[in-house]
Length: 510
Image (cartoon, rainbow, N blue to C red; front, side):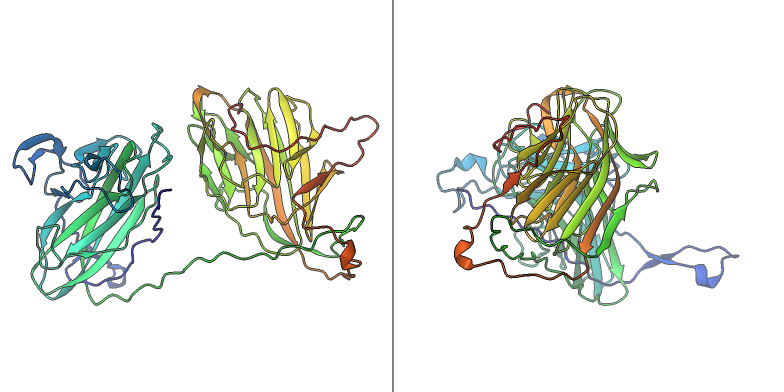
């Protein structure tokens, strides 16, 4: 099994300077004059040409080495198998990347162009650098925006089966031009993909010259190992910077619940307190992460709607709550509706794992644990709700009316109510940590998707006290349960939906 390296460290922010530009007019009050450090780099926005360069090892001119004006390239030329992949093809490691300008795509942070370098089915340790004159005995700060796409699949928007593409920047306070130099101060690596990341590094120089370096270093030789760089900056600081403390994220452990005896009724909450709520009465969706794909996520008529774009597409919009999920007894409620139903369904999911918009390819499993507690799915041929993996409610396919849902967690028992009627209960140690709406699947066949809306979302936590009695005698307790769901008797005018055995299935039908 591959020993995968995932360094999720954002580069440290800290430094100092000199050289400032002041902008003012004769009528500008002194207190409105703002000093702005000068960017000492040439062509920092990569908006110029990308002329071909000579290979630094062979001296041969190469058309595939198109580097932005004022910048020079570097790369490691050591073809050998790393310790973690001893049986590799040596030619797939540390290959010379191709350099070229990127223009007119979402991989340009600002302006019209960015610098790209990449290898196909290979790794590289490479980048580009520039040497700059600076005041002696000064602190400098180098920063740049970068996006990595590392994928074994041909889906430009997302990295699938990535190669752990590590990104970093460096400063040589002596102004050297050799990437092997021990004088280069390299910042921490980050392996974030498919998003713009701002790398920042500070250093002190006694000389009047520094060189700044970028570095891309994927671990595994996947089909696409690409990085895109834009909007670089080198400034001189007015004083020594103070280190910025970095928070270390920690997971919150939740206790395993006691097994629930037959016939035990978990106590109801006496007083609910709102933790967070979204009525979508404002156009800004500040507490929701969004990936609109080729469609849109927007507030319409007091609800959050996920809509298709003008034409068919391989992916549907996604939105996910960025609120916190506390411990204790909880109650989640919301209203939902569907519109313009098609063969590609969309989902509202409550999951036991956190979620940040990750997608999956059709035919492969969904992101783990994003709807294992509650799943509401609707397409033109089916409409159902699952609690802990079992179907507890079915609706009429094509129904576009609004429905209300309440999901209550009492100790380790989930109680689901739809349109005011309890439809199912289940026992599980899972705790809710995410809520999403849309569809995370990327399909090979483009199409229009079933549109979905969410409104009046509210999470409440039990704030009242209630009496907890002993759970009868220990010898009568069942062994720790796997998630189980019960379906209450159906009303006289409705037949209960047959229980389904949960399976790990790809969503090719979505």
